[in-house]
Length: 91
Image 1 (cartoon, one colour):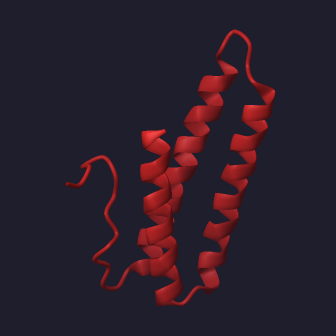
Image 2 (image 1 turned 120 degrees about the vertical axis):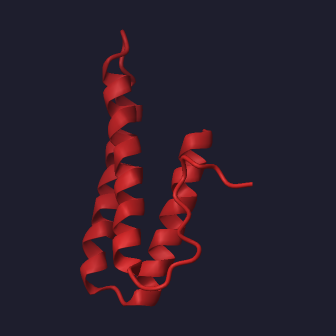
């Protein structure tokens, strides 16, 4: 059973780079929302914020590598980030 809120990039045929960019952006958006929510708590957890920021930066770095990725690599990145998003939303 698939979750309609989580993109499914398993059937990519062309457009792998765009799908990977979309998947990475979804993950970055999740990190942004978590950082904002943590900053708004009465006593923000600075260690959690730093971890979220580091993970967001890693995702952005992967996004930058897409410029030189071949279609197979882009497909793998898209699948990895779709899976990561699913894990993050379930956590």
